[in-house]
Image 1 (cartoon, rainbow, N blue to C red):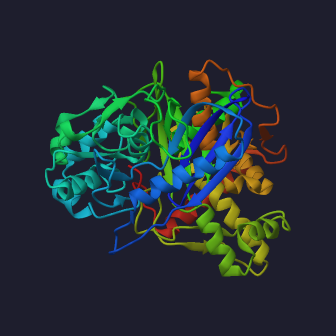
Image 2: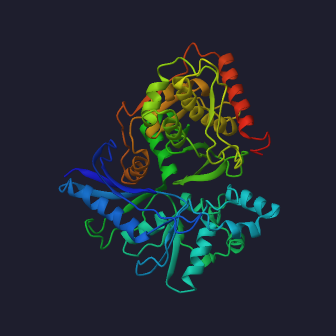
Image 3: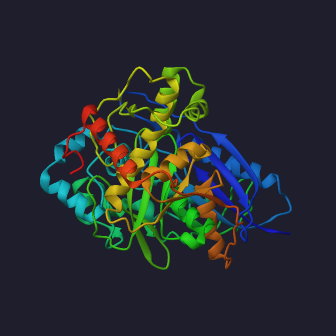
Length: 487
């Protein structure tokens, strides 16, 4: 029987399960289940933790049923981050899962939003004092638990591990812990001062564990054999970075950009104390040694393209890319997709979407081209902050929008660096599986076709790149970005 690793990928709207060959990381079977999401009040975003678990369990059982003779050696997890869960020792949720998108903690944060507290949070966690991270959500869940002694709290990884092990392991992965605002990324431990600030009892929090197992073994899960070790756990963006490095080992150490609804960009650093304006410093993973990363979240990438496609009558993002390919440039048109403000590195909530530089020659195809360029420019803005000296010679790329070869070429041109694009669609579970495979003693040897490369075009000069970037910066100003927005 062939050895396989089961990679669980628990996301905001779906739970996926992949069976992979630990030697090559080839996907041998897969399954998926949808997950519902609700907004019971303005700013509140919830999920049913029991449904999240059942969807993940069912997807895993389905994938395993496709290869009944496989030798299941290990389980790996990649998960949505910052979302918070509360449950009891019997494995029953005691409140809704509070999504990373949820803003119910905003009013509480306003009561502690002082310059001193912002500095404390920034220095110890590498993050900003915002409701996206888990602390205010955990505070709300602690209140819902009402002091009951059997309550457990954590992020989605902790919830899945608890259920997989039949409640025998109550632990959180270090990289996920670093997204809570309660974790000191230098000391790699819960911080008593931060727990006090956010009114979350330190002794109620799960044990922090390395990204690399063991995390216990499966017990009593229908459709999954007992005794299978959990050997790798990573937050989804962290897992994507690990996956890129594994699929292209000659370029391990470079940053990555994930092109989805928004964009997530991570660039590694070995200095936990290092900070960059407008981006976070987070723990990428903890294995034999910790690795940190600068991370930025861009709000509108694929979502901006979808909006623009609807506005000009193109058939979605793919149709927009095909339309953009019919012209050699945007004719000076610049689209700034600030449809709900701008994220990293500007963090300007009052910025507005703009389409500037129009002329009599501007047609749908030029506007479509400006849309693709807006995605590439936003990645460049972040890389300019993370890598100001240009030491990084290439960038890994993944996510749905990488199917557009035009977008990838525009990105390489505007970035002035090589772009190494993963051919694997589900890069996060591949990264988690790679971690588990190494724990089993494998050194995965992925196919040479695991990535394709884009280099800056020979005719795209430094002068042209500078002019395009200057035009973009001018458009940002018109959209409402102030010179100090990312300070």
